[in-house]
Image (cartoon, rainbow, N blue to C red; front, top):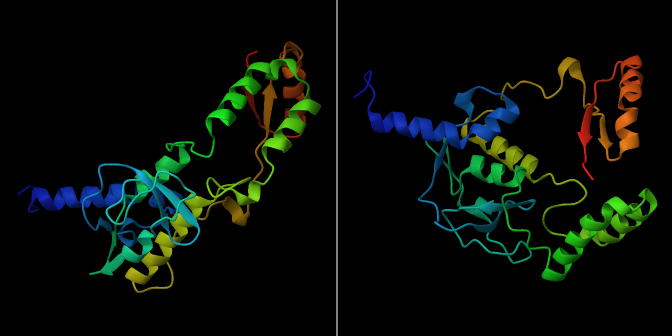
Length: 229
């Protein structure tokens, strides 16, 4: 016993906070509303599975079979998600799955050996191409993007779908229709704009000082990405 609480209970609470970490960081809601626990021991290997209709996940799961290709018929673990005793019992670790997606910790199986070789060749030749040619190559590469199952293109919203589904299930487990959380943008704003500059040549590098002055004249703070040749 530690402070009137068993070590096992403390460990379970810590595990629960780790399970809900990624969702809690997104919504900044009271921790008591996100009460997650694992349904069973997770698999030793990793694979692709679904969490609802929209979200394709990659990682360990405690139910179904993980596939090695996102184009396969994937098991939907949402059917094994249970609400019991005010807790949300899940067959996967949401924080680990979300980290895998954000950090691209999944095999890039959508590229075959031929496409991988072309991609490597493109980046070797890229310093010798102009903007017009690069745009042509990028358009060709992005053809038939709507048929790509994973990741979604041009914007992958899988993490958002997972968080929204978990939040809806948490509402149900708490038997409420509202959960207080910190809004995403301040002062009621619905979005934001990020300004970035890619610096790829000596001419671009030499122009950075003038570009900083232009940004400052409009009250813009931008990031500069230095791309070495």
